[in-house]
Every structure is written in structure tokens, then in C-alpha cells.
Length: 60
Image (tube, rainbow, N blue to C red):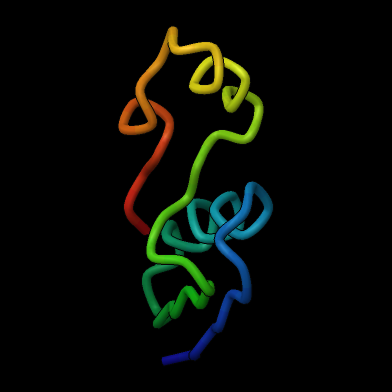
């Protein structure tokens, strides 16, 4: 079984994780400094009060 480590849970890291999960014989490890990911493109909505932070934040 191959071991793959993905550094960073940003858009690219999560996309890589999503694609690599399709491979059966692989063990994936995702490493990030935060235990969550957020939609950076929606931060302005949280700042304006039209969205809550829970709507744009995802546990990793």
C-alpha cells in the first residue's frame, strides 16, 4: 500500500485528497495547521453579517 501525505488543506490540497480517494491501494494523510477549511471567497459575506462562519467552515 502506498503512503501519500498531502501538505495543506486549501483548495488544491482538498482537491488532491478528493481525487486520490478514488485509488483503492493508498493510505492518505492530510496535514494542515488548522483543523478546518473555510471558503475564502465567502469571507465578505461573514463580514457583512449575511452568512454565519459555520456556513463557510468545514472540519478537515
